[in-house]
Image (tube, rainbow, N blue to C red; front, side, top):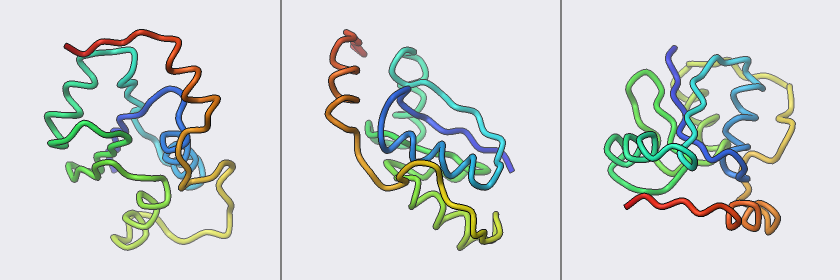
Length: 111
């Protein structure tokens, strides 16, 4: 299985996706969309929208998803087997105020 996850370095939603990858011991490409303009542009082009996270699994784009939604997709398509293991962070939570403050200190322009 080939997985490419378009993620923010520090974000509740992105960390939820990472937690699912760890929970199922999945290899994936963690693509930083905040610090690399080309990565962000690629995500928008492939997903057709500007919101993150986006996760591409074997060519199928899951746009603007939580870790919980990624896990549901993987399980419902028999790409992983159910496990009793718990994720190490919430998989369906937005960015905290601290995350937003951290991102606000960086000036990133995509135009």
